[in-house]
Length: 93
Image (cartoon, rainbow, N blue to C red; front, side, top):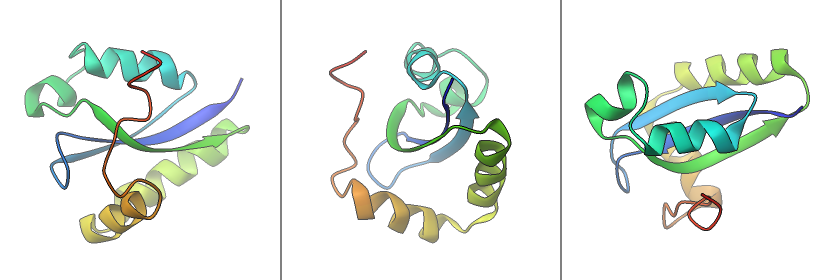
């Protein structure tokens, strides 16, 4: 099973949340439903970036790396692949 690291945002250049999961589709659905602690509290529910890994340890390591980075670095990372901050899962979920 593939593992993923993802970034959610409230809106373009809004509050960011970095997470990791083994079931990206399910986890994105949970965030959109307002399940969990951070997402409903801050209204962070739009996925704007993700990376897929075959190895769980690699995904967790990458999650920690992303969490340690400055916000400006994460914004730049998102805008390299998703300049409009669109939800890549909007048609799937």
